[in-house]
Length: 279
Image 1 (cartoon, rainbow, N blue to C red):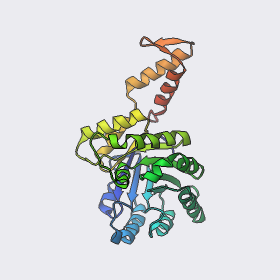
Image 2: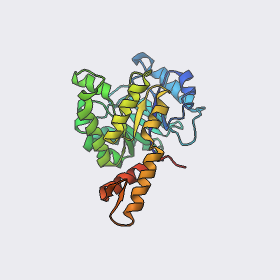
Image 3: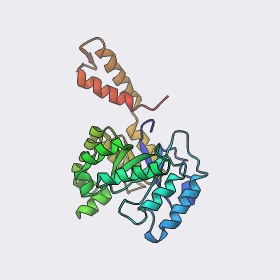
Image 4: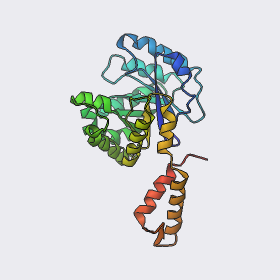
């Protein structure tokens, strides 16, 4: 995977009309969803729809194309993986990740079908997945896991809690996932915002995610994609400040905007510059 994954746009796998339009909002990554977006009785039909749609799918250059299969314990998992392996998809999204063997088995199946190059994105969206996030992502990084997302809705459903606008109920788990991702050197993608017509709610949630260290966000509507890019792309002012910090550090101890520059500021500046889009 190249570049920063600021947006990952999900589209129902059973909706060819929506799949055909998925590239129009220019997301960094698209996910054709065979899991939550498809009813149990429609799984086989949706799988066939996704395979057919991938033959002609048009997305901007550099856009990562993924398929979210059903979880490893489901009766559809093996057939989903086999079908995806025969397409042009760049990789697989594995939801409800809870055990390292799930990642190892997925990689084994992909390799057996000649898709050793396929990337994997894992979903941490249950109590077991969050509590074992560090070991899951560390092992995942050795078998081609490039990113992990926090699924707040499923996580709270698993706990039996209640979702709130403030999100305090998921702050601990949200922090655990981004910390585990950092230690495993994989990209961390933040929870969805279900209020698809509330741009301000998305902006607030995305700002909190960036403050925590997330690199991007899951999107469930095309209108959320530019909002995610806005939130996770450094502004020109932020980039200018980061360059000034790097320049000041080259002269030894210095100051920028009246504040002393030391090693931690240099590292923060490097992170900001690393998030800048490619020219």
